[in-house]
Image (cartoon, rainbow, N blue to C red; front, side, top):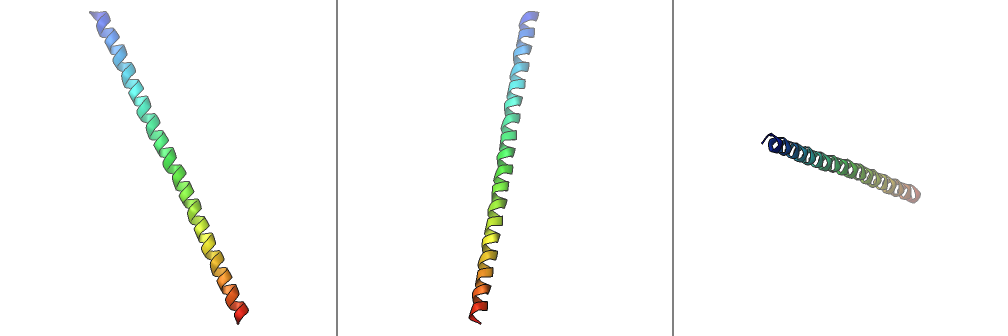
Length: 67
């Protein structure tokens, strides 16, 4: 009887460890994906700002040429 309880406890502890490891891995992957998407979004915003500044500069340069 003791062997059955001991075996059951080993199995349950392994299952608990395994499920915790999988849960932790999924959370870490999700966090990494969120960080990566935030970096890409920031780069996109920088590119948009650069394009806006470039267009404004070109617009002001054309206005200066016309004056």
